[in-house]
Image 1 (spheres, helix red, strand yellow):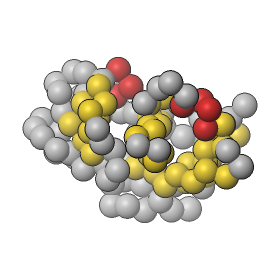
Image 2 (spheres, one colour):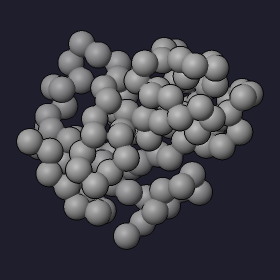
Image 3 (spheres, helix red, strand yellow):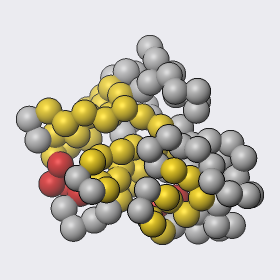
Image 4 (tube, helix red, strand yellow):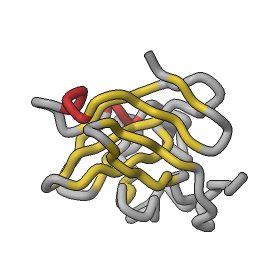
Amino acid sequence: MIAGTSAAVDLGPVGALDGRDMVRMAPDGWPPLLVYRIDGEIYATSDTCTHATASLSEGELEGHTIVCPVHWAEFDVRTGRPLCFPATRPLETFAVTVEDGRIHVHRKSNGNGGDER
């Protein structure tokens, strides 16, 4: 079960990512999140493209780049930075920690719409 606060949320065991590069999660009180495991590192961004409001979980992950399924906007999942037109606004990114084998996502201030509370 996903439990959370305004500052952090426990998304469950790291095993939820087994066999997958990315998983969409929708914890209460949070925007839909897209959680990625790339080369053993875990990242989290908003799941919603800033250009076309499409679900990025339906797109393709190419290295550290998520490609939107609608207009092929690309974002770096580490920073949220848009990498090509038509996207011009960054994705919201979230700090990730792993404690006792569980994924915790934290709100942070990163200049990409995240907020620290």
